[in-house]
Image (cartoon, rainbow, N blue to C red):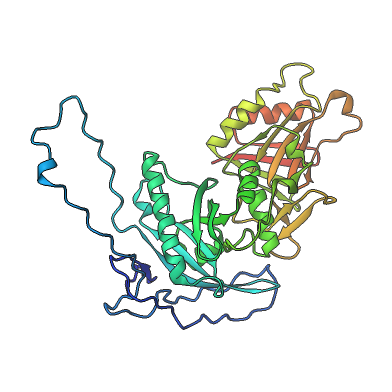
Length: 424
């Protein structure tokens, strides 16, 4: 068996197939008190490669390819290549040793125990700026075996590698979608996507704190929600459905969609211009009555461009129609997330522990208060659906505007609360 430097069994294809064999041992799940708010069990490190075959490895072996038919000597050109025909461009080589390792992981929610395989790539990080990618797949012994899944994961990581090469080395990053077609052993070919996010704490724990991206195998309906409304709204809603905090901790290509765009019909985010910002986190502290916002450079550029539609120096521009709305990212340090779907009355909270003192939203909206509304509409910060809305009069809007346009850290009072702005 080939073992990675970290002690995980590694999948390595070789050019012949031995008779398939499946591991007869099963992982033991240590029971803990029910409740999805508790952290998942530590992964059980166990070889996910079958019993040794004749050569002592016991790994999956793709079938041998026939050798190319040699070209007859009589048909070969006897002259140098024509000068008018440029030689073909060289193809960049695939990084040597691109494969993956896997471990068995176990989870317990308030309603079920789940055993899964966690795969992570070995070799994608050879590309500058690229992190390895981890994907956890729920085990379904009656539908497929590890031997059936291994070549699917191997091809998936190869497709990711080829995508990086074809894009000139641009890495896959958090917030992106990687479309793919998976030849599943139970349902046949399925068009799906890998939704990429920063690795949640549970995944890092499973992989001994490796700095990897986390990929979730998602349906096309779920992908549409992720693309339109961002990672926070899509992933926390799915995590809530599966009772795993704060995102789904395993993929399952056999299940139906958990989300569709219809689940958010009538949302405020459908009625306004929504900026597709990434890498912004915001925490609303109920005790300190403070909203802390940390904004990345790329996101700030989008916000600044949108703010210029409502410059405070122009009289009459600040009205109830002055609004800048942008998406928030997932935050590993969050205690609770707001969740909302069409038909829901008010907001709901998806929390990691009882009685959270702060929570996160999936979007923020800066909204103006027109002069004629000053007597009836108060400044303030409040939860709205699964987002956070700031109501600001002209003076407050100007302070917020100037801080964001000049990229200046600031504390801006908004009604009885305050907003603390900083930049990453």
